[in-house]
Image (cartoon, rainbow, N blue to C red; front, side, top):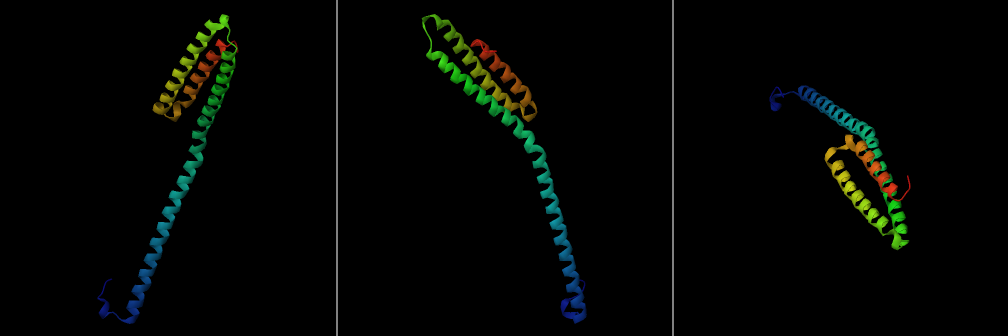
Length: 139
C-alpha cells in the first residue's frame, strides 16, 4: 500500500481493496494455468511413454509363457526317460542350465541397459529358446 491506512479516505481504501482483489485473482489464474499446463504435460508424457514401456513388458510376458510351456514339455519328456535316453537327459539339463543363465543375463541386461535395449535383449532370449527347442527336436 502506498499510504498509511489510517490516513486514507474510504474511497482510497475501496480502490486499494479492489486493486488487491484483482491482483489476487490474477495470481490465482496464473497459478491455475501453470498447474493445468503441468497436468497436461504429465498426461501427454504418460500417453506417449506408457505404451512404449508396456510393449516390451508384454513381450517379456509372452516369452515367460513360452518358457513355461517349454518346461512343461521338458517335464513330460523327462517322465518318459528310458535307459537309452540318458544322454538326451544330460543334453536337456545342459540346455536348461544354459537357458537359465541366459535368462538371468537377460534380466541383468534389462535392468542395466534401459528400455531402449529391451528389443535386442528379447531377440537374444528368443534365439536362446529356439536353441533349447532344437534340443527336443522341435524347430
